[in-house]
Every structure is written in C-alpha cells, then in structure tokens.
Image (tube, rainbow, N blue to C red; front, side, top):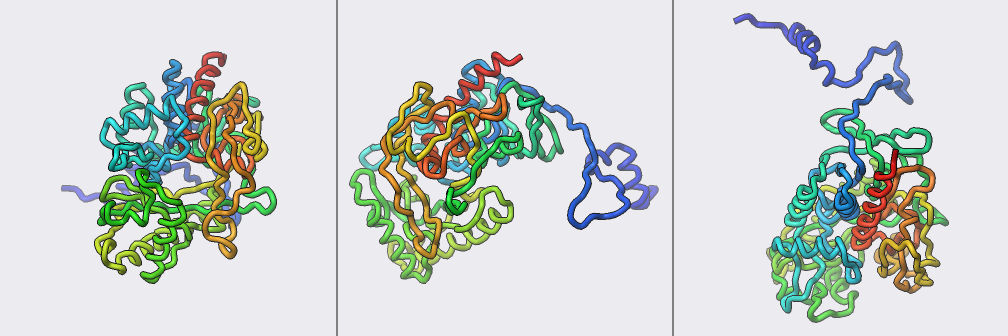
Length: 446
C-alpha cells in the first residue's frame, strides 16, 4: 500500500473540488484589524416560489398555510430544526389572546388536541396550553399536506431588490450561501430580520429612552402533581386572582435560597405531571444583538436551574421536581418594529379602533415587563385599559419595499401597541391575513 503525505492529500482534495466547500478564502496582502474585504461572488439561486415566508413560528406557519390555500407555491424558511417558534423552540406553549379567534387559530388548536396534545382542565375546559412535541409534529404534517417546502437550519442574512421591489432572500446554511427567489415575501422572523436587510425603516424600544422589555427563558418541569400544587398555579376550573399563586411560588423559591429575576413566577399545567415554568427576566439586553442574546441565555439558564433547585430544597410537594428541558431559544419580547403603511398606536388600543381592512381583533392588555429592575421586577403599570381593537392589514404591508409583508411582533406599531398585539394568538391571525394578501400580490406580480 502506498502512503500519501498530508500535503499530497490536501492538494488532491482541493484539485478534486473539495476546495469549493471551504468557502471564498482568498490571499490578501495585508490584514486590517477593524474590517475585512470579502470577495465579490455570485450567489446561486437554489429555489423559486410564489411566496417565501421567513420564520416558522406561529405567524410564519399560519402565513405559509394561508398562502398555500390561496394556491401559491410556498417556501417556509426557519433557522431552527422545528416549526412553532416560541411555542416549541422557546417552550412557551401557552397561547394568549385566542378566545375570540376563529380560522386557522381554532383549526391549529383543534388539530393539536385531536393528536393528543391539548391541555384540558379536570372538568374538560380548554386551558390554552399545548404539548410542545405534539405541536411540532402537527405543524409539520399540516405543511406537508399543503406541499409547503420547508428549509430548516437556514438563516436570513441579506436581501436582493430590483429598484424598490424585493426579489430574493439570501440564506446561509450548511449548504453555504444561497438565494431564494419569489414574487412576494413575508417577514415572520419576530425581530424583523428580513425587513431590515431589505431596507425597511424600523423602531426599537421605548420612545423616551430606548429600553427594551426583558427576555425570558422558559422551562418544562416535572416531578410534581397538579392536585398537590394547586396553590401555586391558576386552575381554570377554580380561577383565583393571578397574583396569589405567583407570590406563593416566589416565596417558595426565596425560602429555598434563591430569589428569581422575575418577581411574578408562573406555572402553567400542560399535563398533571408536566408544567411550564416562567420565572426569569433578563434586563437591559437587545434581541438584535448576538452578544446580548448569548449573555442573556447563559445567565437565564443558571437562574432557572437555581430557581428549581430552590424549590426542591423545600421538600414536600417539591421534593422530586426536575427540569425536563430548557429552550433552544430564549424568549425575546422585543425586536424591530418595521415601518408599514399604517402604524398601530396606543390611541388605537385606548379607543378600540376599527378598520375596514382588519386582519384580526386583539384584546390583550398593555403588557410591559419591567424595564428597570431597580424599581420593579414584575410588570410595569399599564398606561391605559385596552378596548378590543382591530389590527389593519396595512400594518402588515411594508411602506418602503414592494413585495414585502410582515406578521407577528415585527409589524408596524409603537412600543405600547406592540406590548399588546405581540402575543401568539394575534400572531397566528396576522399570519393568516398576511398569507392571503401575499398570495394575491404574487398572482398579480409580473
């Protein structure tokens, strides 16, 4: 047998084409410590569709299904390895502001319940809490039924326009850098990633000081029994004031030696022996900063484990409590609010505004999680009492970029309106509306 040297092997690999897998590395004469020059390149177009949806969370899945049902060819792009976003990657499978929603919202809940993933009280009432794993499977099955092509593990990194019209989204993945062409695009990334890369104006944070609501890491816990911890969560059959169970849970953690970063920790029953725990706040961080999200994630996971360890130290009903899972993605409440043809405001919520082009009716409160932990680690006081209000389709259509729509928490609105409409029940309804409108636009596109 002939033995080849390492140098010969490497030379052969490059000659055989493996060099193209190593990227666009080129020799340079000098190195700039502040920046690097990337080589010009031609990015291959790997796929085309009528509608491309970026982000496979609640809004994105609904948008993709709605567009497909309007006879559009749809590609759904998701950066993780499952659909569902905050419901699944984020483990927050508690659906808010769904009581007045029909259409896809009701259909999704029913399908998950039929698959055995719905949450019900002992008396058979729907709780709005769903099993994470079954949710993943049902959402994938629905997309399969509608011939929606899913691109997992793909991140939006750039966009291509022809004058003011968006023509391609640029992705990075294990396959390298690729472009996807479409006649219409929907940004359901939550943080407005596609819109920002396509040149949309956007707003961030509170209008006075720019602070953004804290992030939260959710956990699934087991080793408890629902009937033994009824004092610590709100049972829909015997509803008590929200504050009481939260305060008891905080006191139990504090007695075990750890005061959680969120002063109103909450438990939501998925099954009798499985609960969602929300007991974490990460303050002063931005959802569009990689370093901030990393720092928040590292701290949050330690905080969650310390909270559960503190409960276990209490013994009794908590003696066997354990964390089943912490999420792949920390929960981000705020990212970019993209500029649309209409911008939702606090006045719309105060007045209960209605619109002829309503995408849905929202009714969730102005829910501002504490911006300054030195003053408060719970929920800041709401400036108004919300009257049920419409979200117009115009708030889902980009003002500055043709062929771009959005749904979910990145739609066009101010800081206060966003803190109400950002919950997932509204995201699904917005996605459903955006999908229909994008499919119509794609049909008219030349």
